[in-house]
Image (cartoon, rainbow over all chains, first blue to last red; front, top):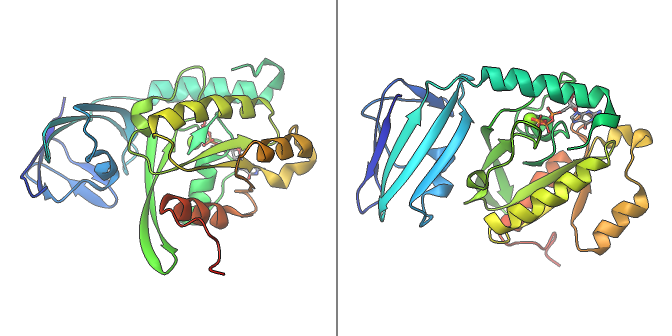
Length: 110
Length: 164
Ligand SMILES: Nc1nc2c(ncn2[C@@H]2O[C@H](COP(=O)(O)OP(=O)(O)OP(=O)(O)O)[C@@H](O)[C@H]2O)c(=O)[nH]1
Ligand SMILES: [Mg+2]
């Protein structure tokens, strides 16, 4: 499991430390990066929820990561990105089944 | 972007963000995040788009994807009537998870209107029940831009189209 930690200050600055780089919006995030915020997840930061789990977020390089956001206190977050996850098997199963449903609309009963 | 599988969520985002369309179906796993700048009443807004997987046998939509959203589309495939039922179910969940964020129903694949299972009177009924509906085609780029502009406007709470 590759980990990415975000720690903030009261001003809302976020410090990112992560393992293997992950790419979002043309920006490669790597260990030691300091970000004001992580664009795709910015909307989730103001929430008062303690923990947020976002499975299977597709990055720009096409790989999927699991993201865990932990809210410690106001403006203080720990973010972990697990980029060891392989979603290709799920993709294969899902693709096959959905295609099958489309080809046989009668069995389309979800 | 929310809805049943293969209704055209990814195609609508790709049309809007990259001006492209592909006939080839590649199902979405999890979430793909995109963005595009949009101008609303002279103000530039960066819209972050979450293209979420369709509900299918293997993937159920998780409310953790929805929390924090400022608004959403429920996408329905006019050629597959059951996608309306799936859409209705997801909408109820999204409404809870987002605390009644604004939303618009997109009935997609309007280029295949001759094959639509959804009838005009059913659509009218939905409108009468308060649904804001836009018929779109990702393929022919029909009302896609308008749909995203409209949701942006709703999200910013500026619902009036034109100043009088
Ligand atoms: N004719 C027509 N086909 C469309 C339109 N939009 C999407 N499609 C086709 O419908 C299929 C599914 O499109 P996607 O955009 O992948 O659907 P999706 O909702 O993202 O599917 P999931 O990711 O599996 O939930 C593809 O083969 C597209 O080419 C449209 O407006 N008209
Ligand atoms: Mg998709």
